[in-house]
Length: 498
Image (cartoon, rainbow, N blue to C red; front, side, top):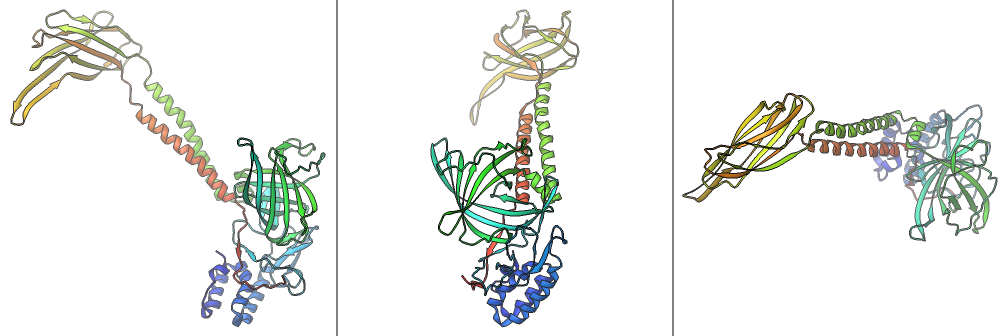
């Protein structure tokens, strides 16, 4: 929040002390910006505020940031005394970022309106800040805020759509005094430069290959090659597809091309200019702004994402590996007490130490009886390597609570097979069983671990991949945002003729 907003509604007895505290806390530029409004709202302190303004102006004049002091003109705004610069050879007009007036002409002498919005001098990116693009250093020397409507053709619905949009246009200057524009449309950033097309195209308003915009200038501050005005209107047409330009320098890079028409007060075209624009990735924006901490955050999130992207297939591979080999065998055999042992299906074990999961169950057991089953595992030499006795039972009765019934008709256990071989299972009913016959079902399968932890782990990994991707994009988008921040001036009293 800027000083002018913090001081809004301050009691007169506390105004000067509060303002001085903000100055002592390092908010010198915002304090200087607030003084013209404070002089209007608190006329009884006009002289004291004027003295503070003079001190701040002297101090800030020495701190004006420029590309090259030898080639820059540093001067005071004739209206508020703020320290400003003129660096571009093409500059024709300078709007003071402190008071919003024409910086080189007294507001009372010319028919020049003061901009009724003030630039946030403590924002993420502002006039005087530097930006590195393709290893070249640029400085923001001016800024404009445009709003309007954009028409584009929806190929799915086969109709034109119109949306309200706003974008920030930073005027950038390098040490060779070349001018370019850094644009923020709210979600993406672009680097834009003028160019002369080999085949100029002036699309009409019904050309479906272009987005057609009608723009109004809301705010301007800094130095410009023309005189911006609050009633300024622009029309634009931007090609919806990027393309390579037919020039040697741009032969490898793709650009979005556009044509912009500046209109006069009667709505007639005053000037036509062609631009080529290239999108700037979030990471390049953060790097260009010199935000190392944000760049490190993006790097950490992307590193996390890469690690998780490796972990994701590893979890799947591990689950497959641990559950590899062997088929599930299920067989149902009728057993009768006193009969000989029955051989069940053979199966192969290909590796030593293999764990098997065996599940046995019985059907047809009578009430209040039991049925015993001997299970033996034999190798290819008909030598028993494992044996287990299973007893199944079913009991019923009555007590004070009524009839009851209990049973145990299934068993689940594991065995370890030490040697690779071909094995077979022999089962036989216990002759002493009180149920004469029953159906015995046996299932044999490799000891497969539950895939649920792997599914959960994979799901968590996937969520973290999405989160990391989103977080990296969010950090990059937030840190690379250069949308201009403005606020209404606290005083409604104009300092210039309208």
